[in-house]
Length: 114
Length: 114
DNA sequence: AAAATAGTTTGCCAAATGGTAATCTTTTCT
DNA sequence: AGAAAAGATTACCATTTGGCAAACTATTTT
Image: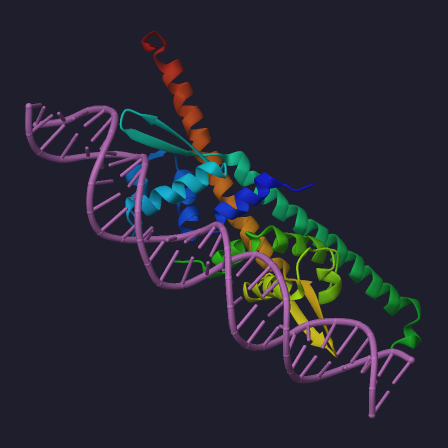
C-alpha cells in the first residue's frame, strides 16, 4: 500500500519557500503577485513552487481575468499531520512497553539487579 | 526567523524510503542490516538515507562492536507535527471568520442579497 | 489605441539527490 | 589464523531541483 498523496504532500512541504507560501495562505486566499512579493526570487521560479504545491494537492488556484488566486487545501495538510501523529503514537506505545518491561525486571527479582 | 530544524525535519521526511525507515523504527531500535533488508537498494544508498535522517535529527545511532543500532528521535517528529497543526488551526480560524462574515452579511440586510 | 499590469512560456544552468559497483576496515565466529 | 559478517568509503552516473534572463499573451487602465 503506497500512499501517493502522502508522498506528494511531504514532497511539497520539503521546501522552505513552499512552507512559507502555505503560511501566508492560511490567512486567506491571495493573488500570485501579492503572494510572491516577500520572496527574493523572480516570478518564474516562484510560479514553479506554486505549480508544485498545486500538483501535490496542497493548494488550489483559479484565474479570473488576469489574476490568479490561490487557496490552501487543508485536507492534504491534515493527511501529513495525521501520518506524523500516528508515528509518534506508535513510538509512544512501544516506549511505554519498554518502560513497563524495565520496571518489571527491576521489581520482580530485585536481588538479581546487576 | 528561520527555523532550521524544521527545514531539516521536512527535508528528511520528503523521501518515502526515509519515512518507511521511521515507520519501522517506531517499533523499536534496529540494527542497520535488519533495517535495510526490506528495501530494494544496496547498502551504500541505504546508508545515505540513514545519514540524512541522523544529520537532520530524526534518528540517533550508536555503534557497539561491528553493529550500529538506530533509534527514532521523537521530538523532531513532533516539531514537524506541531508546524502542521499550527497551520491547520490558523486556517481554521480564518475559515471561521469568513463563515461569520458571510453569515453577518446575509442576516444583517437580507434585502440587499443579490 | 497605448501603456501598464499580471501572469506565462522557453531555454538554459549549477547543484543536489538517489542510485550503482567495487574496494576496504573492523569485529566476531570457528 | 582464517573466514564470515557488518558496515564504510570511494568514484561515478542520470535525473531532478531551484534558480535565472528574455520574450510572450492576455487583460485592465488611462
